[in-house]
Every structure is written in structure tokens, then in C-alpha cells.
Length: 549
Ligand code: NA7
Image (cartoon, rainbow, N blue to C red):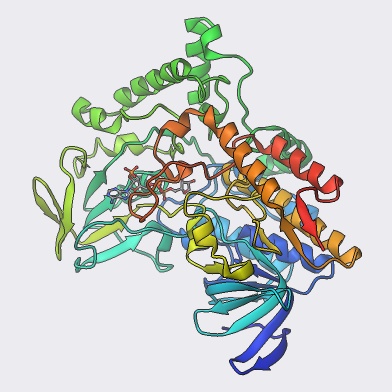
């Protein structure tokens, strides 16, 4: 580990301990802003980051084709006018290399690296009741202590390999999209397999298909995709965007998911067929999440409305894929449009018109095992030079589970959350005093244009720490009843969504991870404005629902 130069050090029998007021785990967007904000407020805070650089998602997910699905100019931080002035977006939906450059600019501009230790993966974190502080132990055995522990570990940061027999046997190149090498990977002339057709798979497949020798896509469940419709931003457009930043961020504050898009106030079932088709057509031709987030207000809660939207997209897929037998396979049959996270695509369907691309439907011919040379399905063994695992993440609680987090009386967070997360505001957990969970489960940020909600989370947590410091308080913990009420509210709010009837990472189902087979709701579906209001009300009432001592 490097860089932790300013820590106070104490030495115990088990070796030196770095001491801070606040430990932040993770140097992605939330960890970086949290560090900046706390330092501004005079706290001695330090970030421990497992990776070799800042950026979190944008550091790890450097697979070909990785890019924003949010409009770039709605995604950047809004807290610094100087940052908004200096940074120019080159595309409306910026790609990973540019996004990582942006993260590095943030780190440079606010001189964050001097308070970040890289290559420090937290193995365990334990609450010390007597000392009223947390102790983090790193994989290399080093330790750090602080009064507050802030997790900034991201909702999709624990990549999962598929539970397929023989996974370790393959002799060729093998990469997971979420652990992609930072060096260039060539596909030219190679026989490449991609397993997985979620948002990462759809982006990677489209890009790999441009240069690959032969591509085999292994699809277990097709997803409904919508066109991204990306385009360049020149200097003139950038200046126009810059002039409207206040307006853009104000708009994002009002919408359900802090995107620039918000639901049409009409119900799909109330309008004429012509009106309905006209809106579908208009939105399908717009960039980004317009079709998903800007559609009629009932399409994600009313099955009949959703069926209409779904039927519209079926026609689009059929028109784009030449072989209708292949189109049949690409059209989802077990869920309606928008009831899983919608991958945004730039020519994905046309990839399957290429003669060097084949689609293997795992519902017809399941994978039996991975072999030294390739993948064996029930009908054949295919040989590959490379397998790309676009198999997703142990979402939202997975990154917590990978750390042995123990609260009061040795209570394990993993056990507490075994049947699904329980939190207060998605920011705090009973029995885990002084632990704050940025973008944690049951937090609106997990269902949001992330930086918009990250700013809210960070500012709320920072205000709480200031409030406590001003009053000489040293401990904050959610009450069991506040936690129970919030958790019940999260589930009530989600119950009306059609997505609750479908297995996905949003409903906590991951067939590759033991114990993740029961549907639960991982995010908060009441929308960002309601969530923000609730957090503000709690603070205004002296942090109602928390015990502060
Ligand atoms: P996702 O959306 O969880 O997608 C993972 C994909 O991998 C999905 O198609 C899975 O099929 C497939 N998968 C997983 N395990 C297997 C096995 N064992 N065999 C075959 N196929 C498998 O992850 P992404 O990385 O694409 O996206 C995550 C989020 O990141 C995304 O939503 C954005 O918000 C950013 P399944 O559907 O489970 O049948």
C-alpha cells in the first residue's frame, strides 16, 4: 500500500494502525466526492481503494464498448463550477476511456490522491464498542481505525463468474467485462465467445463484432434493448450545454431517476392507437433512456400498457434482424420491455446479420461445461481463442458481503441481510453504528443517474457528521423501528412495479451466487425527489429515526 503518509499511527501487538476520523472505502465517484466534501469541512478522512487508480466502475469496466447510458452532460458532477467550466464532453454518451479521464481530472483538480491509498482491499471491518470506532483490516494484514466508516463501494462492483462446470479448465484468453485488463485486447482473426447479454454484453458484443474473426454469443435470456443514438459534441454544442448546466441539473432534480427524461403524464391506455404509436415512434428515435424513462406513465406498472410498448419494440427488432429465426431468439418472451435494466445499443441487432456471428440460445441448448478448448453445449463443443464473461455482478449487496462487516456484539452484516437488505434510508443499518452506506441498498441512488444521487447522499452524510461534531456527539445508529419502517416502505413502493415479477439483479436474483434465488427489492422505487425530501425531513427533525449520543 502507498500514500498513507498523513495518518496518525499507533502500534499495538498486531502492528501499526493508521488512524483517521473517517475511513471511506472506495475511490469511485462517491468515494472521491465524499473525501473532497469531508476535507472541505475539516474532517481528517482517508480513502482506501482496492484498485490501482480512481474511478470505480470506470476504472474496472474498461471492456470494449463500455460507455454511459446517461447523457454525459447530466452525469458529471454539478458541485464545482470550475469543474463544469474546465471539462468538455466529446460525445453525448461518453465512452469509458473518456469517463476515466474525467475521474482522474476530478482527482487532480481537488488534489484527492494524497488522501487515497490504492491497492488496499478491505477484508474485514469491525465495530469496537469500547473505543467507539471502526477497525478495517486489509488483505495484506494492515489495519486502520476511525470513528466513522463510509462505504462507497458501488452497486455493481462485485463481478460474478458463471456457475458452470469446468470454468477453470479453459486454456485460452478469458476476461470478465467487470475485470477487464487495462492493456489493449485484440479480437482480430480470433474465435471469440461472449457469455451474457445484459447491458455489458450488449455493448461488448457490438464492439467486438467490428474486428472479430468469428463471434459466438451465448444467450440465456434475451433482454429488451433500445437504441442509444450517440453523437459527437463539438465546441459550439459544448458551449451551449455549459450555458444551460443550471437548467439541466434543475431538471434532473425533478425527475424520477434524475435523468433528463421523465414519464409522459398520460396513460398509454387512455390515448388513441395513433397517439400511442406516435409517442412510441418519437421516443424510439430519441437518444438515451427516452423510450424507457420518458414513456407513458403506466407502462412499467400496468401489464396491458406494457404489452403495447413491448409489441412496438418487437416490430423494431424484426425489422432490423434479417433472419426471423434469429429474431425470434433475440425477442424476450418471459418479461415485458423495461422490466429489467434496458441495455442501450448502437447496432446490436445488426451484429446478428453478420456472417461471422452466431447466436446460441441456451434455452434450447444449455451449456454443459467449459472445456480446455471452448464451451460444450448440449448439442456441440465449440472451440475458442477467447471467452468473454459478460455475466454481471453480485449486485448491490455483493460488495458488502465480500467484506466481513461486523457491528455491535459481533453481528455480521451478511447474516443480517441474508434474506434481503434491511436499512434506514439506504444509508444506515441498525447494529452497525457510525457506518454510512453511500449508494447502499434501499437507497434511491441505486435506481438513479448515479452522480446526481451520489451528490445528495454525500452531502446528507457530510451534514450529519457536521451536526454531530457541532454537538459533541460521537455515535449514530438507526433505531430498529425506523429501519423496519423504511424497509417496509421500500417493499410497498416496489410492489406495484412490473419489474418485481421478473428475475434480475434489480430484484436480487443471481443464479451464480448461493443464496440469491429469492426475489427482494434492492433499490428504492419511490423516485429520487421523494427520497431527497424524506432525507431532508429526517435531518430537519434532528435526524429522526436515529439514536445520536
Ligand atoms: P447483467 O445485466 O446481470 O447481465 C448478465 C448476463 O449474463 C445476463 O444476460 C445473464 O443471463 C448472463 N449470465 C449470467 N450467468 C450466466 C450463466 N451461468 N450462463 C449463461 N449466461 C449467464 O450484468 P451486466 O454486466 O450486463 O450489467 C450490469 C449493469 O451494469 C447494467 O444493468 C448497467 O446498470 C450497468 P440471465 O439474464 O441471468 O439469464
